[in-house]
Image (cartoon, rainbow, N blue to C red; front, side, top):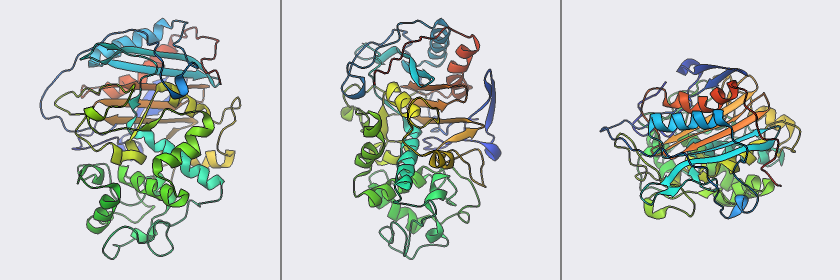
Length: 418
């Protein structure tokens, strides 16, 4: 389902929130749709080229990745149909099997004004897939003994103490734990029309947290109710900064990215003028402006840019499969992939269905998905637009599943070289 939120980044919808069920060949995959900005006018962006990307960039992709040489017609067909149906300029896809990168391909045009062909080295805003990096960083700190999930966040004895807020904290604010923020059960600040992350755009993250604590009381007692919260993950970014003594971006690189060989992820800019090297151009539909938001302030819940290969590499180091050694201990991985009492289908930054773990992301000009599947596959899909047409979110997810159902021949090569 789609929820017409005024400023939604990504509302991962499940269980009582009408979590959508999709029947896939490998079993029942529960896929969540994302909250989106309310459209104001009808506007269609075009651009449906289908070229294979072969570009290079600095960081992870330099001389270590190549576009797939083995054509998978079933996947190409699904991507091309999706792009045509929803006016998507560019798509990047990465698929692993048995922790080998077996498919990596770019489609379409990354910059329509300059007619730039999409490349596998293109970086995209990943929106709410950023939450998984925040979660894994906290799990690393848990493994290092630097935090406990039941640590309180605010008030005397809390990790952030009284750093934020100018008034006496409202009821239950000082009861909120790291665990509850990770599971979206903190009791308030939901991704709805009043999402704090899409108010006061000129404030810094610190100023916004203070303003929200002063002006937005909790709706529920922490731990008793699930409500997807971008603001909760903004707070978790500040927890990471407090524990590590680094900026959030530096801490994620130290704790997560560098240990697994990712060097080209970064926090994105806000405006078109702040577009980074090898970053795609984003295209709004229905009057949405991809460059009207404070993306950098979204750092820990929606601010990263990455290649599809970056995310595929990330997945194989946290997927519980045996080929590559995961960067988290088995017990911590199990905690990350376990839901709460309030919502058993959402873990610490991950949607859960059986042994499948999935998340989507959505911003004006961006739609993303990454999934760890129990059948041994993982997949990543990134786009540089999003659509309000019915079934857009469903069809994005089904790109992989419809191709998989045709039992194609996948490459036996590993496009990861390290």
